[in-house]
Length: 389
Image 1 (tube, one colour):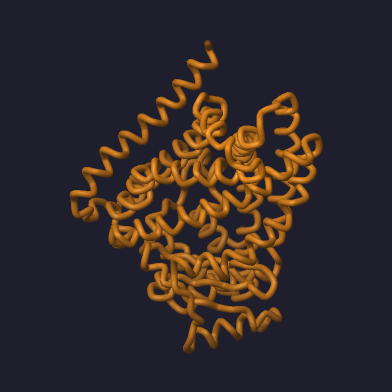
Image 2 (cartoon, rainbow, N blue to C red; image 1 turned 120 degrees about the vertical axis):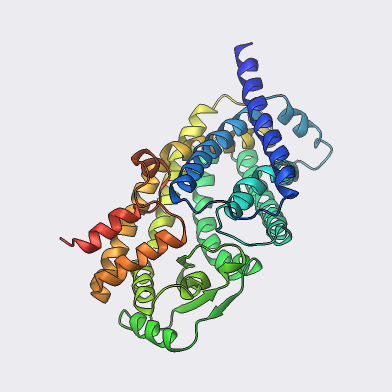
């Protein structure tokens, strides 16, 4: 009785949240969504609340669905299909349905709020087109993973955690190969950076033996006014990507410092570090989940759903440790950029410009940085550059 009550409360709370966002989305859809605020503190409070709510709601609602009455019914509805196909159909359909149900939440939290704070002027139709592409891609990937997971739990019932852990490593590597080449270009245009800036940045990269690395300009302004740069891919697919929002707004010296930071990730093979961390964490969590579900004799799809639900809960629990490692690598990349350029003022200026353009707080609360931040606060990074030890 207590379990049923708890599951009902979790499901009801999640449904109520979606319903409230649906009402809000309908109201916002009829308005022009003009910018109403440029207040970094207010934006920070809003984003923190959404991050905390989203993490808890996603984890708890998935667990509630995995142990509630709807999942077994959905699983039984697929019994006419071949057994090997059922997990893919179950999870692929679930991914599509949940994405559609969550659309009001996505519209309000990822689109309308960004428009209201003046951080995007993307048309609603373009946002919905990106959402549709993202939903389709997610459904295909989830279906493929579920089919592989079904093989693991069906053929290796006693040792599936080992099989799954071994299988995850090539999947992590494949994702880093496929995403920058085939997935990201579905949403944005990537083109080689040209002109004097490219010559300058290529000379910088050549100092570390990576002068042939791809340095690309991305039309990030399609979705946001925020500035960003990142490293993607591994091996021959490694590329340094600069948003046009950064290129068009930052001074050349500031851009060089940003690229030197990204080169730090590239040269020290941080992508491989993150793959190794992801594999280690996933393997450990799979082992713990297997212990918790050792007496669960559910059929394949339902067992996979419960594995995924507890794996998600475990990932939430270890997220602070993962973020701490990520922050340590960002500090290392900052030190690399400072050693490479010797230009601390331009680095500090770049971070201030990033703060202003992205409506970022210099010092978010410590609890938020601990739980959710993959990067150190901009205030600490600026202070480190202005007061080098």
